Image 1 (tube, rainbow, N blue to C red):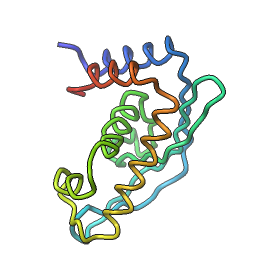
Image 2 (image 1 turned 180 degrees about the vertical axis):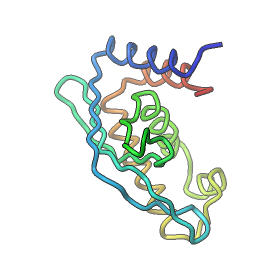
Image 3 (image 1 turned 180 degrees about the horizontal axis):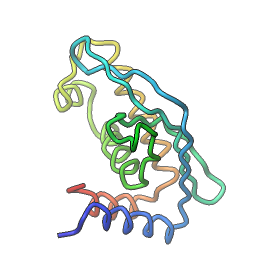
Length: 145
């Protein structure tokens, strides 16, 4: 079985071989609410840059403060970011109603519709930076991440 650290190293090397650049810029703390309910929790917010050749796109990324070390934010790994972006990009293959069913969102919610459209927009950006063949390899690599 491959460890998380090994998967992260393989993912980083695969992206490097395909000429994909990665940056993570810390933007500070934020609050993130649950999909349903009124609870919120503190997150660390990042701007993620993915580039290939002359194309570069930025993505919003958050991670829970439970990943901090000594209460200091830790930069997300490229594998964790790619895993999230690939998952979010699945929205491009779903109708809004089926996406809501998959992620337990209310299809009457404007917030859910914003999230769905945001995921679809990010999918277009991701597709311009990561070739379909590379996305397929990454999905397979990170399927149990």
